[in-house]
Amino acid sequence: MNNNTQHHDTTPAADLPAVDFYFDFSSPYGYIASERIEAVAATHGRLVHWHPLLLGVVFQSTGGAPLVNVPLKGQYHEHDFLRSARLHGVEFHRPSRFPVSGVAATRLFYWLQQHSPVLAVALAQALYRAFFIHDIDIADPEQALQVFNDLRLSKPALFEQLSSAGPALTLDAARTGMGSAEIKQRSRSETEAAMARGVFGSPFFLVDGEAFWGLDRLDQVARWMQQAW
Amino acid sequence: MNNNTQHHDTTPAADLPAVDFYFDFSSPYGYIASERIEAVAATHGRLVHWHPLLLGVVFQSTGGAPLVNVPLKGQYHEHDFLRSARLHGVEFHRPSRFPVSGVAATRLFYWLQQHSPVLAVALAQALYRAFFIHDIDIADPEQALQVFNDLRLSKPALFEQLSSAGPALTLDAARTGMGSAEIKQRSRSETEAAMARGVFGSPFFLVDGEAFWGLDRLDQVARWMQQAW
Image (cartoon, rainbow over all chains, first blue to last red; front, side, top):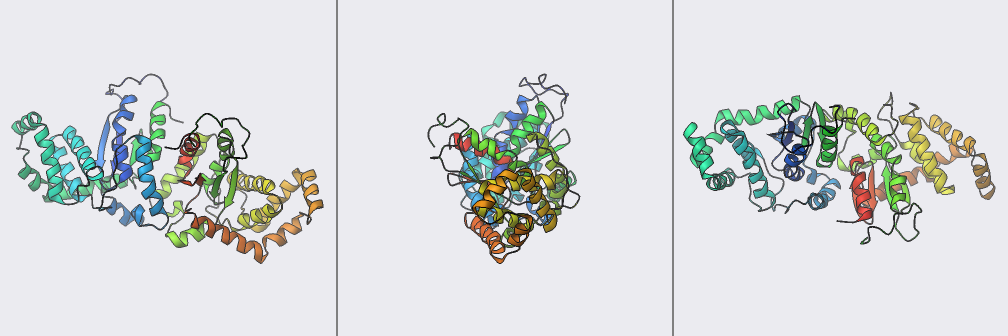
């Protein structure tokens, strides 16, 4: 992008590529980024495509490990999670069980995304807040489903409208959907597709083919949209 | 620090604690930080204490590995080294041999620091530039010594003055000094002291007891000096 002043209205322009936002549901930095990325992208006239992934599968290839399990690094990051949340003005409470598996939340996301990409984003935000604000163990499929159900009950008109246009988006449908072979495979293939694009961490951003890893690169993501360097 | 306007002159104030700057001589992000940290600290009235360390020794404890050897991460960082250098306006050429051992450079630094902390910083900058601009293999003790000798020849009055106050700081003295058991032990104990303070990467900054890891935290280091959050 060579023009650094043209696209600063807050309405995403159809002609600008979306920002691809990759994250794991157990990632604190992914959560904080999830609370910021839509606003950052919108400022530069961009939409955001949300891509939950299974960092555990990625780590099988890269030899990575959850931050908090690494000597020295673990202590640093436990402190930095809180400091980063304060810096970004995001509410954050260290979950009592952490890290957890993001598999259930990821499957639920991709099941709902098939029916409504917009609601899937709302679900991702609700799942993240459930885990990082309200200490709900979203690794437990039933607790993740409860977050979905709360979302469903909070937007009855929207869910009714979607249900009338396709299969009913009930709690039972969600339970069956997230357990289906198709959705299990989808969660895995989305992770593999992310790795094929070079993604190896959470959060991870792709903007105009340029990769940025980490919450602390959010400023660079914004800067790149304004003026690549 | 509660006052965010008081200390913005460019003369480091004696009453403000120095910023501790930890780095490995083979670290591209450490090199880029080394070109910025003095100015950032001076803006906030701080001095900088330079602490080269042996990241290989740290990795024995943390299970870390050189970035470029990790699948996916390696490719990302090879690209990001160049992008980060452009962002910070720092000249950078990817050394043909990389990564290398920082042992020789670290020993030379601590030998010279015993005689002159100021010249040791100048030497650190010269070693980094030799490696990351001029593709000189500073892992080779003789090539590292040549960087020292060039520095010596570029500041004859200063070296003569120091030599008259203590042992002569000649090329031979440097060669003997960096090979001494005392300096070998010092390099290792400095690395251990860093780890005891929680340092596990390069660059790593400690300011008023607060730890920041990575070049992409340089903005946060500056912000913390202005107003802790």
